[in-house]
Structures are given as structure tokens and as C-alpha cells.
Length: 288
Image (cartoon, rainbow, N blue to C red; front, side):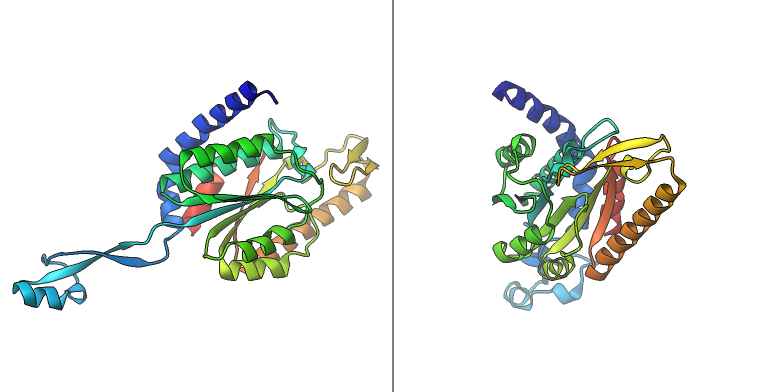
């Protein structure tokens, strides 16, 4: 991609997502993701209504008038984006690819974190750890992340959700907020890694879905290709047997995912290509 074209894309995403993060998400984000605790800030004179438990008796005795301790939230957090950049992200039938939706979501979260003076880092993964960007603050760092999301070409095509979770647990020592962003079209070998990671960090799952993956119209023979494996298969979408088996498969996958997240104590949201992600994100933040 030409540099000028890349910069235009970055700028377009910045304008859209930065506005959303400052106007809509920053307050909800701040409320949903708490700091590490309360830290002492200063003392001031007691005023009626103050909690008597916060009186600083040493300062009160010194000045012969009541003073209280003032505390404030230790706000600074590290936010990690665990981003699935496997080949399935190149699929999309409703106005945008999954990859494009993931890029916007990451930009919104990154700008929300930056507005709250939090650090932001990224782990790009396929069926290997493709790239790690350590957490840092600042607009220029957020713009670098957006550039990488747009331009980075993964070496592998597959998906292994266990790898980024183990990598996060091992590489990030302090507790962080970690968004696992994927379509979760992978085997379920990550259940234990998810539980362990969520004990050390605060994991949030954002599942990216294209509606055509959940419902196949009855239009006769269709050729399907798996972007990750390269395998192709023809199916008769008008077959009642196929439609029944496909529906059974979808229901089982949904139930398995719900059970996995529930057992691990992980909050999740489903976000669809071509649709607004504002409501799902707001609902997720408010639920927390």
C-alpha cells in the first residue's frame, strides 16, 4: 500500500473512532474499567458531611481544627488488544470485512484508553504470535497501532486462541484489561488458558460475526472455501438435511462459546459486520 493511501486510511479511521471514543465511550470506559485502587492525594479542612473515618488526627491535632484525608482513584491501567489477524478476517458479506471492523473496534478502544491516560499495547496472532507492541501512552502510539492494523500482513493463516492468552499471561506482569478480539472460529483448546489469563488479568471477549455465517439461504449448490486451510467444498444449500445439520452445528457452537466464557468469568459482546458497534459496546460497558 502506498504511504499516502495508508495515511488517508489512518486519518479516516482516526476521525471516526476518535470522535466516538471522546463523545460516547470515554465515560462508560472509565466507569467499566477501574484503576488499581485508591491512593492518598491531600488533606483539607473538614466540611459538614465528610466521612469522620477520613479525619487525619495528626494534622487535626497540629492545627487544632479538623482535617480530612482526600483519596483519588489510581487510574492508570494497561490495556492490551489481543487481535486475531488470521485469514478468516478477510471474509465479509455486509458492507465490510471482519478485518475492517476489527480495526475500527481497536481504534475506538485505543483512543478511549488514551483519553483516560492508560497505556495501550497489542498482540497480533494467527496460529502463531505474529507481532507484539508493548503498552505505551500517547496519540502517536495509537496511530502506530492503527497503521499496523491496516497494513500488517500475517505470516500464517490459521487461528490458535490459546497462544495469545498464554503469551499475555507470561509477558505482561501487571494486571491489565485485555480485549480478545476474534471470530472464535477455532478449536476449543484455549479454555484452560482463558481461565488462567482471566485470573491474572481482566479479559473481555469481542466476537466478530458476519450474519451469513449463521444463516445460509436455500439457493442450491454453493462452493465454500476455508480461507485458513484453503479447502473447498460444494454443498446443496436447498437440502433440508444440510440446513438441519448446519443449524444444529451453529446452536452447539453458540452454546459451547457461552459456556466457555461463563465458566471463565469473561464478559463478552457479539459485534456484526456492517452494523453499528456502539450499542453492543455500550451495553458491555454498562453491564460491567
